[in-house]
Image 1 (cartoon, each protein chain N blue to C red):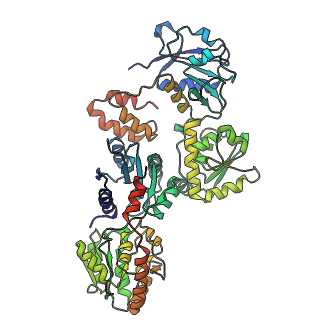
Image 2 (spheres, each protein chain N blue to C red):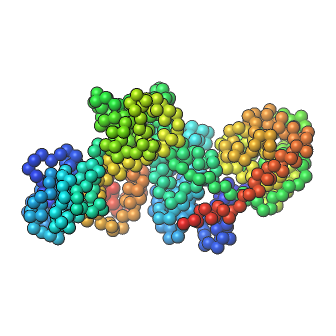
Image 3 (cartoon, rainbow over the protein chains, first blue to last red):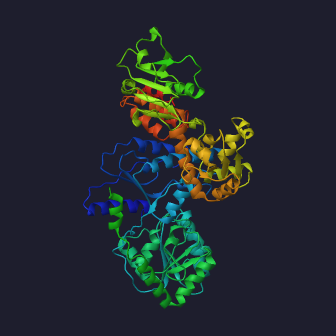
Amino acid sequence: MSGGAEQATENLVAALLRSGHRAEAVRLPTAWDRVRIFDAALAWRLVPVDADLVIAVNFPAYFVNHPNKVVWLFHQHRAAYDGAGGPWSDLGSDPDSLETRRILTEWDTLALEESRALFAISELAAARLAGFNGLTAEPLYHPPPLFDDLHPGAFGDAVFCATRLEGNKRPGVMVEAIARTRSGTRLEIAGRGSLAGELQTLACDLGVSERVEMLGFVPDDELVRRYADALAVVYAPFEEDYGYVTLQAFRAGKPVITAADSGGVLEWVEDGVNGFVTDGSPEAIAAAVDTLADDRALAAKMGAAGRERVAHLSWDPVIERLTRP
Amino acid sequence: MTKPFVEILAATSPVPDDVVELVAALRAWCRPHVSDPGLGPPRARLALLPRAAGLLDAVSDRSTPLGLVTTAYERVEPALAARLDVVVVRGRRRPAGIDADRVVHLATGTVDTSRHPPVAPALRREWRALLGLPDDLVVTADHPADHRMGDAHLPSLLAVAAAAVVRGPSLSTALALGTPVVTDPVEARRIGAIDGEHVVVAAPTDAHRVAEALGRDLPRAAALGRRARRLAETRLDLRSTARAVAQRLGLISSNQGPYAGFEAALRSLHTPLGDPVTWRATGRLAPLDVSALTARAVVP
């Protein structure tokens, strides 16, 4: 399972090709440490791209210098912005960090404001850009991977989540929540990451290892089946940019249990309508899981509302906006 | 490579300070100097004259690019108008008879933007926390005494303020720093700032309250500060004015050799003089014997 930005880039290229364009993805290696963070930006500045149109989607690719540059922003270098001071950032609020972040903010602003059109992957990404860089971007929503394959199914005895097992996705909260349910609901987690071992240990410590299934990488057809068979999807990351998991869950007709600080997920999940927006605590998530386990009709109703919520998503209007002269 | 010689034709009366600074800024592209046979024929001429009358008679060579820095807005005689490649005037007005595309405006209230890098509102907030300053700090600099605080203190305060009420000579500095600024209509007009675009215009009695509200509105403050910075860079910085003059006098070649792209990349990101990334980049290239590039990399 690759990250959301990688999947979106592949799907964007595929959508452009389907629309009759010639398109290819250009990638350069990037160092993410504070000392070398500007190097890749400068490298992008010098890459000769002889295309009619360049669509840049994230840092540092939007530093590419092209007269017809359109930015569809998935994310900036978040470790220098809202993630500064967090566990996955080497930048904080000391004077050196603040100066590095100041220069990066200035560079980002210059590179982004020179684009012919500026879009963002979500309202949240647009809001970050407005707050940090003073730039206005139009949110442009697109369908998640497997959108055409996902379908509703039965409401089984497990909640499901497909996610990278990293700190900002907070998979540990799901395990802790399952340990607090009284309904005996199981948890299936698809995905890999640095926290896999830690989660196994946590499940053992909490005495729920038999109710927590760590699936690791799962092929697409199995992913579709797991979504279809789930009771609901639990997805409570921290300040997610967009959140394919939510959209995939809704497409599969499943309610989503999330947290009030889950960022872009909240653009889709409406508390009590197509899922539950909790305070993010294991207790609150457990209560939401139990509510759905006790009332399958409610789960079905919320799942249907979720499926309706994403029914309009299509690549066609996205491609039309990105390529409009 | 030696920079081209540009002959300066100066009046006997004292040359205003900002014009002296403009000529100094031209040194990035040329050697401005009064007539000197030892320097050979000039690549261009730049006259610093209060009035244009008589300039044509003083210049016998009709093929050398000619510029005029003037404070007069009189009609320029057709023969001279046809001869001038660029006219620099103070403020937003221009002499009659000169096409707009040959006029460069010398702003009132100039600022060296490289000395005052922009600080976005979100980072200002973190600096205030680090320095133990109030989160809602509004700086007021609207009295002549405020601007005599010295070069260091007032810009430092303006760099971390949530917003500022500014009138007078520090207005350009505040804009360069990307400070969300509240000012009055006369001051805004003086520097060519637009209400809601680069600054917020308010009556003095209301200014502080408006600034407090502005400081609380992060996206609005960020947008205003960003556009204020661009105004300072493009209209209030003498280096921009000098670049425009140099361009029109033919001193900036469109092709500056194999390193032009690298230099342009750094310049396009407004990479400050002596910035670490410049040294890292030039350091990486040093083994390739790009001495010409590294020598030029320090040119602002």
